[in-house]
Length: 225
Image 1: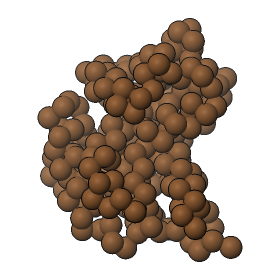
Image 2: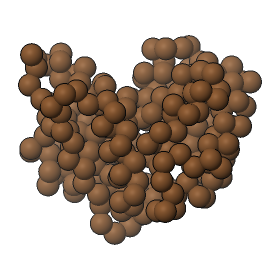
Image 3: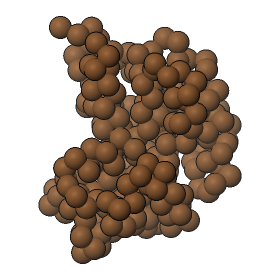
Image 4: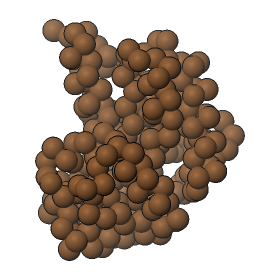
């Protein structure tokens, strides 16, 4: 029987309530005995809104990784643009580092040929398109929907917010009209329950990035054993 796995979950933004959402999703995918140590950046950015804040979050991720990575079996990177994932892998080639959106996209592509990406905030669409291209999956992604849903980011918003769910559902159905057979939730703030609710409403598989990250980390560790 494999020994328990200790995951390091890095949130390179400073929003503790988003870290809690990431942890909630991670816990649904843990094997018995597994543990998660979640760490949150201090200072800016609170959330990533543009390329400049993504750059700062990448710096934060490297700092947190260098401080905490020695004690873990795998790293879960809790930022939906996967900022710093390639850098962290180079720093510790033997340590699995899983970016949440990359993991969700890979899982979705194993389930269906055509994938839609759902996030929040239209200004981020070019950054997500660039990340999809970097991973090599542009030909599989039919589109990226990024509606506005400011209530989703409030620290007082817990669980699945009905207004945010409605906005996501409408955006998901638009992606389905473009040919999406499955949906990826690209947003740390969308962890913690949205995937299951959205799947029920859209009638297709919906992938939570942090759940996929845990599952793929387990698979990589299993290969090592």
